View 1 (tube, helix red, strand yellow):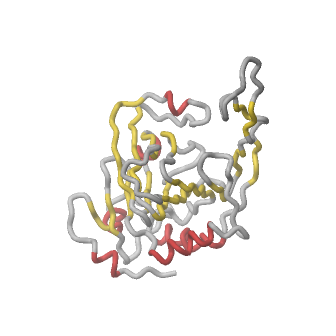
View 2 (cartoon, rainbow, N blue to C red):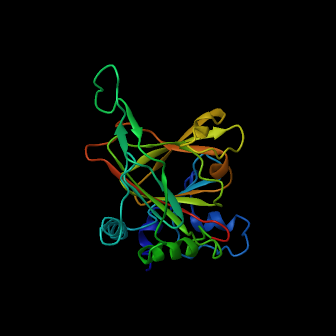
View 3 (spheres, rainbow, N blue to C red):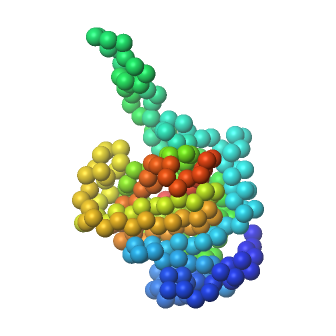
Length: 267
């Protein structure tokens, strides 16, 4: 699948905070197997978070619709609903949280949800492999120099956010390498970054992410629909990121779908 270079070139006017992806990666030292960007330039935004880049219009509107049709096809994809938001996994394993049940109360009738507890331990399930329907996207990652030819992502997490839904501050699991990239579809959102005093890969579920020591530096990064957020260096390892649970700035019917791609050496 090829890209029409016209819309990218039209937005490539000089700007202190915007460069072409070809210029950016040309200025970086290439790691073994990393391909240089192709001749088709993409608008590149470099927010004030070290190692973070945002590639605008990484996919077209037609490609966005194609991805959403695939993700919402029940014959091909299954959303997990044990969390407050819908999500799905490709590659590796994931923990399925058991349904909650109400614990009995000895002194009064419990209000809905008051004494809910998890009924069993989480199940570790095998996720389906990376689907063929995403292969063109993986090819584009390599063609644009986002991932090296020896760093093809084997893992993808898809999250759907509605209304005031969000995700707690965290750093992507340290078992994965860099970069970690997130493709945003549909509505825009602000991704909030928190600088940590030192690298800390504590998880949200364990409570360690919330206890990680922060410097107090906070940066909000605007992610438009169809943009790609690329986390390398400090932005990958030393800055937590989150999406606030709020309706502020979100129109009626606000909806965002994100696909986070990660890779691990040796699979």
